[in-house]
Length: 213
Length: 299
Image 1 (cartoon, rainbow over the protein chains, first blue to last red):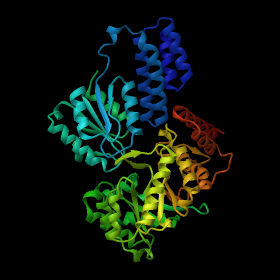
Image 2: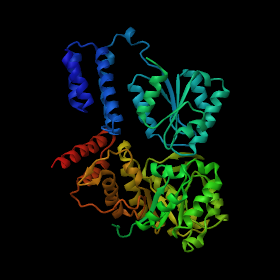
Image 3: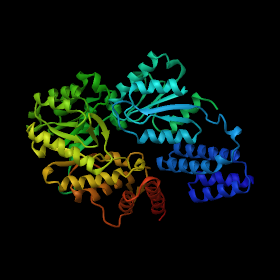
Image 4: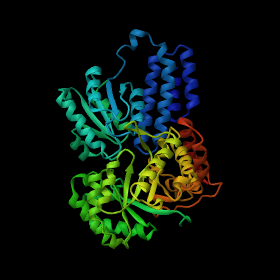
């Protein structure tokens, strides 16, 4: 059965979608441990992430890998006993496109990637009022808040959102990451965020770094 | 190689390009001037200008850049800021006489930021009209339907011509071209349909239709087909589909060899099929190109 595990990792890492889904189905049907199977998926995703960093893979491969993990996750999760799946989330992330900005493609990919990496994601959508971020942080108590924006005007909204979080006394309990458009170190400092990310994998790395599993 | 009936606004003076970012950060005015000259030589009739976020705080630097560019090239400039305050700095710095008397271009006006009409007090300008957002019951909404894009184009063109004295030829409707690799929602197809419906609308007769072409190739692999970068071929594939529908102004990199591709070009075929697909199926079709590029290398 170990060979099956390796083969599954390879199918996912090599973007063989149909083969991966078929093999996962067969493994689960013949009694393979679903928790162990999801472990293989994570391992495969790390390979995909490395290939992405090395310029061998691009955004489409990340999306397809995400889709494979989601499909296999949907097969495996119902087979995991309830008590074992409690507290499975690696951490909670509240995310949204800041007020005045309507762009959401990048943010949606980040949400997708965080979820398949085991984070509970509260997605507030686009053009999110500052107060909504603050309320959501009070309600969900996340470890990380993600502020997304494509327009350069979004930098001001990010700054105001971070200030409002501070004024609400919540800033010390969370890490803030920003992404989208032309973010860089200058923008990070301007907005008062803790870090910026240039792509969805950056967001996953930041969250994993801040919320050790 | 030019496409008949299609003009180019050069988009390189934008720190979104790494090389330009370095020029802006080191305040290398001579470097920016050289970049301007190169774009004009490659066929741009107008140059888009932004120095990035710094433009919001540093009116002096922005003015200096505009003056430096105008002392080198005699084409109009197109100011790329969604802020009336920054546009005011740009319009005041602009000297029409140095562009053969031609008006600058404001990039961009939107239904969601009509305060920019006030800028006409400074000087007349041409305008890029962003059609990807609309105002609905007083709040901004992202357009996902061709009819919504057409609605914005009609309302705003009506306003610009009837209330503010613009001629339709002074209006460039921006249909917003998205990055192909992240287009899960059929937005590329919507842009093509929007071009067709704007061009077929008699109320919009005479407006230009523009799109930021560089965006379409963002995040694509750096593959080549017969020594031509995939990004360039994807740009030309879009033009091959869009120009017959009425697209007439490229916001892009002037030396990217824009051309109409032959029917049997494999990148054109992939982009065509991509626009008929949605979600991950569209992405899967795009990925087939990677393999095709590799096999064309091996041949």
